[in-house]
Image (cartoon, rainbow, N blue to C red):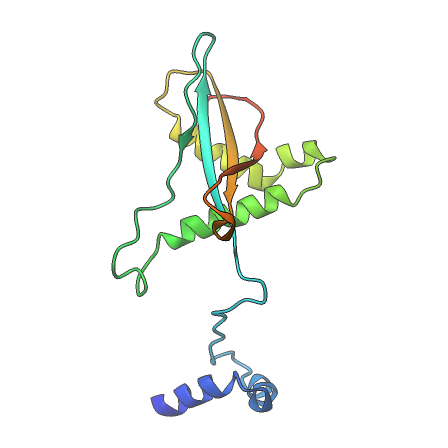
Length: 156
């Protein structure tokens, strides 16, 4: 039975069988593996934040999403969800047209990143926080370029 399931799962990727298997699989039991997307990700995003007070401004600090990947990460890597969530939030923030700055500031992606930075700064002595998103395209070198900078916000 397991061998049949495996064969059908593999056959789903052949054009002659895909439509037939998709129609027959009404309960969606046959997996869909998308190892290679039509446009694979080629960008890495980094989140930096800093804290302000009247007479103090901290340097930009890099945030980490999850622990470093373990050797068994190809089998079990729950931290990838944190990195994927951050990547998706960056995509959503950066795709809003520049003219609608207010739409960005009150949008859920911006508020989620701001909430995360606020949590990271909960023990800092400053009164204001700010974050920035930087991008690196590995195939174009190791240069980070700042693609978004937030307003300053009251630290709560």
